Image (tube, rainbow, N blue to C red; front, side, top):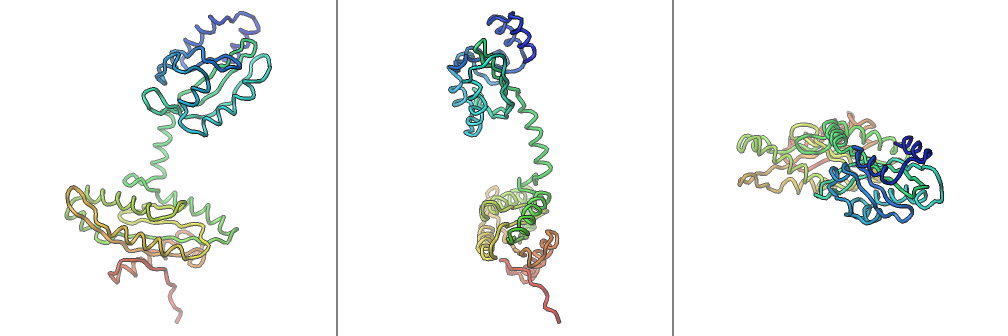
Length: 314
C-alpha cells in the first residue's frame, strides 16, 4: 500500500476523492485523520464491519484511543509511536511501526489487532490500519492452554512446573536462594467419586484448585500433576520459615466442606515438603522426596504436613 501511495503522490494523481474511494474498498479496517490536529475524517466499511463503529463516532485520534483502547499500556504505546512523526514538519510518506493492541468494539467485544500507520505529509493525512488477528490469537491461546494447562482445573501442568523450576534454579544458583516443593494428595477423594459420581469429583477438584491458589503467595506456582495430586513450587525463599504458614493455610482450606448439587462433600489433604538445595538439586528428586514425606504422613492417617527427613545412617 505504501508503494501505491508513493507512486500516486509522486504522479500528482491522488485526490482526496480518489483516496476515499480506494480506502473504502480495501478489506482491511482503517481510518484517516488530518495532520497535525488528529481530526478523524473517515473510516472505511471494513472498519465499521470489524469494530462496529460508524463514521463520526470519534471526533479525533485521542478520543478514539481513550475510548476504544481498554488497556493503558496500549494507549501509551500508540501515542508514543505516532507522536514524533505526527507533529514533525516533513515531506513524503512516513510509516508507523507495527504494534499489537486490543480494541473495545461497539458491542463490548474485545478484538486483537496489529496496528500500523502511514503519514502522507504533503496531503496532511495520517492513515491508521488495523489487521484483525483475533482468530489467530484465539487459536494460539487454545494451543497454549493445551500445552501448558490442566484442562479440568485450569492449573498449570508438569511442563510449566519444570520450566519455572529451571528458571528459578538458575537464579538460585546465583543468588543462593531456596525453593520449596510441596506435593498435596487429597484424603477421602475416592469416597466422593463413589458416593456422588465423577461429575461431583471433578467439581471438588476445581474447588481444591481454586483454594490452593488462594493459599499461596504471588509468584508461587500451583499445578495439578495427576488424579487428585497437586504440587506447589515456592521460589525465592530466603529461609524455610514461609513454608509452614502456607502449608497450614492449605490444610485448613481443604478441610472446609463443599456443597455439590445440594450434598455436603469434604476432603482433607496430606502435604509433603522438600527444600532446595538441601534435599536435592533436581526437581524430580525434590518431588520424590516431598512425595515420601506426604506418604509418611498419610500412613499415620493424620493429615497435615511435614518436611522430608533423610534416613538416619546406621
